[in-house]
Length: 136
Image 1 (tube, rainbow, N blue to C red):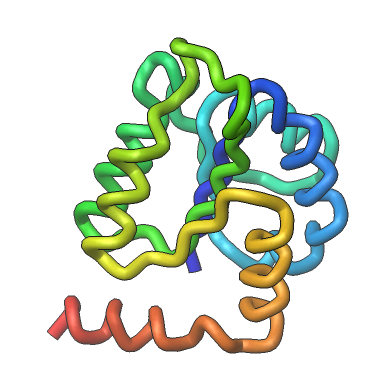
Image 2 (cartoon, rainbow, N blue to C red; image 1 turned 180 degrees about the horizontal axis):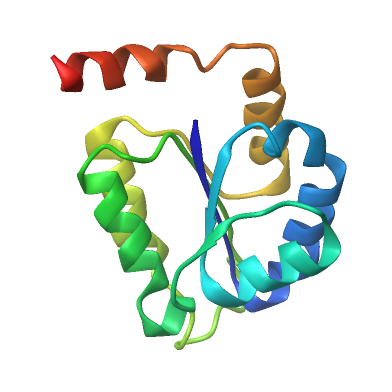
């Protein structure tokens, strides 16, 4: 499974903690992140991931391109709903793409933890069917 990790500035510490808590689950998958978020996760864990540009420079759009090609299986985008800054990635366009392509999208720690636990239990296997259909 391909998992993208993104966080607004005020949520970067939380995404680091999430990555540390679920490192054993995340390590089994292909991980992608926007630039700064990816750097912080790699510093806090032993996870390896593909880093895109920082969000303000288009990293979220690079992830969106993968979504549009149905090359992403899960996105965790910890957003700051109260004080997000103008330079931070726009969640709406990415959320819309995920809705169109039926890709799970977590926006807070609670939904992220539920999705990661479901992933650990094999409850997101339906995404494999989507990939098989696209290859046929």
